[in-house]
Image (cartoon, rainbow, N blue to C red; front, side):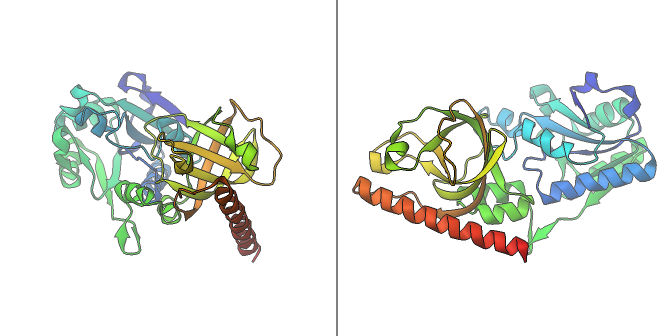
Amino acid sequence: MQVFFGLDALPKYFKGAVVTLGVFDGLHLAHMEIIQRVINSAVQEQTGSMAITFDPHPRKILNHSRNSVPLLTTPQEKLKLLEDTELDATLFLKVDEALLNTSSEAFVEKVLVDLIDVKKVIVGYDYHFGKGRGGRAGQLIQLGQKYGFSVETVAPILLDNEPIRSSLIRSLLEEGQVEKAAKLLGRYYGISGHVVHGAGRGINLGFPTANIEINNPEKMIPSDGVYLSKVQVNEQQFFGICNIGIRETFNEHDRVIEVYLMNTAQTDLYGAEIEVDFLERLRDEIKFNTIEELQNQMILDEKECLKKIKNKTNEKED
């Protein structure tokens, strides 16, 4: 897959492509259905397939706030997921005031017609575009008739009779419902970062933890609590117990993300890149009265996780 940043970077040989457009935050199952339809249609039309996406998230510019919309997928994560498809190209458009103030028809004429001369556009049923998000799928169909390209709209993809949306996934993560979020995403939700020095208490408790500083501060973090996780570090994979919270037992106030790797003697991970996927939420963060109470709970957490891992392994074998 080729990647281009900005309209001027796109080569002429992508003229006549089949494209889709959207922020695609999360690249959940509904997004991936649209992407696959673009790929299939491009094969039928014997032309290129392309996703046009946007960075930063438009609401960040509209709200003039860097943290207005926590990201389900950073641009780097988005590219990594798209590279696993058979998409020919991804075009990133920079979101700024000029782009946001472009009318829906002017955007279609400038980008889709003059630049790409698209053959076909495939979007979700609730697609919005142009100034004030005033353009709708219906208008895009009309503009396609005017400018000579076809438009296909994809009906909502449902799970439990509810349309799959990025906003729904954010709400689930805010509640710690990582298992249901995974069903909507089609994969476990994860974060990435590097290991930094922490307070050093874990090793004294018998549970050495890796403290994580995430790579992108705009990335969404699930709600505080303790999670069974899958961890990749130093090109190795482990199961882990991840704690997100303020470590109330020690009367701290800064939110931290720390993970204990099970079944390994590795403790010197400082500076290493680390990826954590959230498999299941175990419990809330708890303020314990004594260190002993905390240690006992950590022992129980590990036993429960090992039991869950065994059950998951048996399910796969069956």
